[in-house]
Every structure is written in C-alpha cells, then in structure tokens.
Length: 266
Image: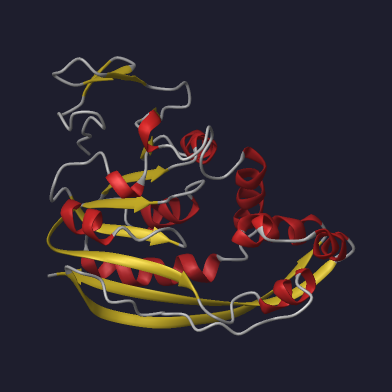
C-alpha cells in the first residue's frame, strides 16, 4: 500500500531500508520491519500510546482467545465486502488484523498505531502486513487507497477515514458498550455509575449500514486478570485501593459487551 510523507504529503519510495520522498524527507525501516511516520509535531508526549507493559499484557490476553468472538464477527462483517485494501487505524499489537488476514488473505493490509511499542510488537509477529507508527488523525496515506478502515476500540477520525476510503468503501467501528466489563469495574471502583453513551454516532460523510451488539462471558485466572486491566483505559483511572483489590483477585468471571457499527462512505 502506498505511503505518503507525513511532512510534505509526497509519495514515499522505499530504497533498501529507507523510505524517501521527492523533497528528501527520509524514514528508516526498523529492524522489525515497521517504519515510524509519526512526526515530533504529532506527538502529545515523548512516548505516546500504550507502553511496552500494556502491549505485552494485551498480547498475552488476546493470545488466550478470550476476545476471539470479536474477531469472528469482524471477519463475518468484512469478508462479504471482498476488500482489496484494509487499514486498521489503531491496530495495537495487531491481533484483529492478523485474524482478518488469515480469513481473507487476498487483500493488502496496513496496520498503524501511535504507540511505537505496539507497532514493534505487531511487526515482529507478522511480516506480511505493512506496519507503521502514525496517528489516525493524520493518516500518511493517499486519498481513496482503502476499501475498509477499521477502528477497534480506538479513535474515530471520520474525516480522515472518509478521505482514504475509495468510493463505496466501508468503515467498521468497534466500541465498548455501556455494560462492558462490569465485573472488572465492580472490583476496581468503589461505586458504579451508569453514564449514557452514544453507541451509534452520526459521522459526517458516512451512513450507518449495519449495527449489532455482541455479548459473551469469559473467565480469567491468575495473571490474566491483570492483563485485562492493562488492556483497558481503566489502568489510567484506577486508584490505589482498587488496584489492591484487583491484585488480590485470582479469578474473575466477566462479560463483554461490544458494539460493531458498519458505515458506508457516502
């Protein structure tokens, strides 16, 4: 899949282990095979996105198959579209994109994430997919290059997604439902509050073609309990008392509630 320079938007051409644009901007290919196209001006911190500890926890949890039902529905929704090019905007360590590629190897796949640690992990696991460090808010990709864009529990940059999608392309948005992981929340928070959540957001440039809610239960033991926490935004919100209660939790039965919205580019 063609890449664009994040500085001047010129086409990037690979020369051995370097990507270079006509203006002379160059980006080295890392030993693991990914390329970092996140500029200093696009960073909100020194090391944005998930830390190495979070990435390893997510890899351990997902490799345990606990979220396999999500990957199964992802494939069921995307395969009938018969895409030629798929972009995962916020790919993390690459679990969902690898699952989709395994089910539909005919497409060209690109995964990007703002976390260099996540992309490094993804690139080490599958060399057949193009992996880049970048922000979904400014995709280093040409207009109309993709048939499907995925956002798996990640940010939705509707304007950028519409720009890189070809006419008739689709955007699959995966969100946590309001009752997602109530078991985990009941341990780490002293009180649960119900907050209204927009699960079918109106997106400029898109029409909602399909939506479904997926619910399933799973049971965790030992380290998997902590791995679940580090997969979620709650790791940034948990207090000392909640963290201690979770450390003492050796078994957890919980339920996932996931909203899958399939949008069509207008």
